[in-house]
Length: 348
Image (tube, rainbow, N blue to C red):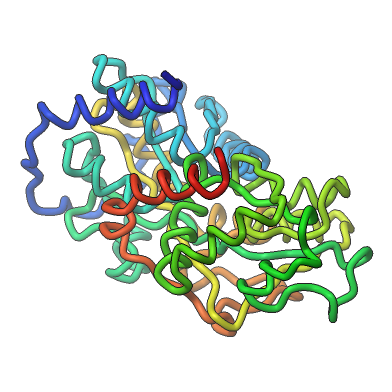
């Protein structure tokens, strides 16, 4: 049996003993001298995340610069692996992580149902975050928004020869030229697969699976495969790694199909049994600060729901992209079907 299936089994076993008992949301909290002192005494915070490790560590370094007595331990993996890891650890009574973030919003519905989150509302979230982008009970909020896009190597593929729609990927001329990530590993792609299955039907994926697609795990990987010249067209992958490569001079161009582009909201939360509870609150507050959110945009190419974050020039504004929104509860209910269909059509 695979490690993924074992971890998933542990998660479902853990769900059996938990009860839903959350109360009203707490009052928003500010960063005070007392909180900083208590966090510094703890001296560390452990951060489980699915954000690209370069971006996560950049934010961690910015936090450590503000609070030099606190070390951030970044533990990065794909969203589904982070989700399974927490399920496995919590079912075994292991509480290593302080703060968690994944790109699959449906994970936080499960975490909340299992009482695995600490209610906490940073002042900035209370003041600036739309209600739709934060939990009404104060358990989590949207740390980032990620688009799942097509892309192509613009120095090797002419713009007129690049796909314009999702269905264009089925053209025989793209056979053996495509790379895509896996919904069983990536929360962004889990959400995008759900959105496209609703929009185009499963026959789209059945036909795509016959296109000689190079299969990778994380949504961070397809842009890197393009940058290395292993494939010329990204059938799906995250937008922000495309931006990061563009900033490094790689000739790679994102595609926003007329049918729409899937958006996934990466929520963050403090875990219920955080071993460094004060450092967790301080780090969690910093994640939603203008500095951290602007850093995510400028360096990481991530989208933010914070209204005072300025989008970097040269990138297509979010307001000009037709977005495919997905209900996290519907994504959660469809996960097993998505994994089953995907294995059937792509053999992995």
